[in-house]
Length: 438
Image (cartoon, rainbow, N blue to C red; front, side):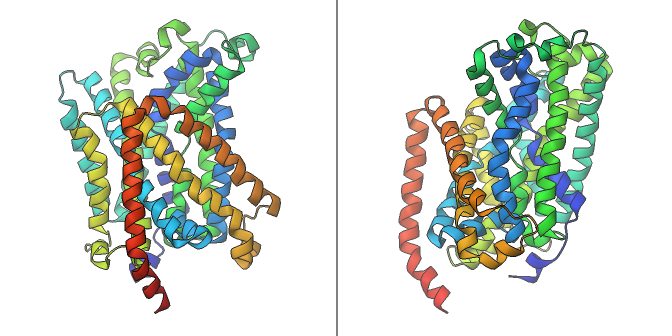
């Protein structure tokens, strides 16, 4: 690897800010109201249950990150434990899944329009995309500092919302009444929790910085676990305020702005929307840009892509690859895709490529026994076999539940994309094999 790739640039707190920024995004600001319509006062508990759903795949990635930390972490895990061809397919799906970038930008524009009616939403969404793209062109350290400031503002804003809102909640007995927690039965509760799972994914991608952080073997599982715990506590507080301030029929399907108008004065309300809600979407957008090129850079070194595509600017950023993700993210905006469609499509594709590194854990103890033995965070052998299977069941359900909404056209386009990638893999494989022999 290049010298720039191996430099230790990121501290524990840098990784915490990136992880928190990646997790806190569209989930809490958009999905909370939808979950309330599904499970009523069970919404706070659904966030806790969502943590249990996310926990198994996250533990799998944490165990891999602790045993074999490296830049391009998930790509590297798939390559070394499932095979080089599979790793490039994983990477191609990861690129496609970053249409979710558009979701954060469109959500930002929607909230901006709530403060300043009449804005051109497409222009605002494209503008914030360009801002985060530009910040990451200036290098990962600059982007991490940008991220730290935004996450601090975000967390403070949401904590103020919670503390201010608690004073308006008059009856907490709803949250211990099983009839009100499961108004649509356990099925409705589980469906809400699975939806809220989307608000908790993201911490696993810090493994992409394995070679660029201090003490990765301990930092990766610690940051993943701690950031998830902090976010769940934050989300539970938000859900209590969202369900406790107004009658349920006034908040079902709505976003946090509805209760924020009751909790805050007009001045504070606008500050909350701008400093909390909109910042949360920017942090998620920026965090993806911060890690997304790692796998492509590794694939280039493996021979799957021409080396000239991995050229870096003076800040050490592989700008061609970063631009590729920028194009993937801005295309749904320019073509007029809706926020809900972009979010569900991005999540479904994310569930597919997310299975690859999780399943890779199955082979860790066999193919890298020394790395498994020396890992600071080591799972029992049985867990490395069982957890990936459970993750497949969880993610499989998520993909199935998204099928009708995405529609046949979306799935057909994705299938066509996969066919093209597979053909490319077949044609490029001789070059990769020849490179490996040398």
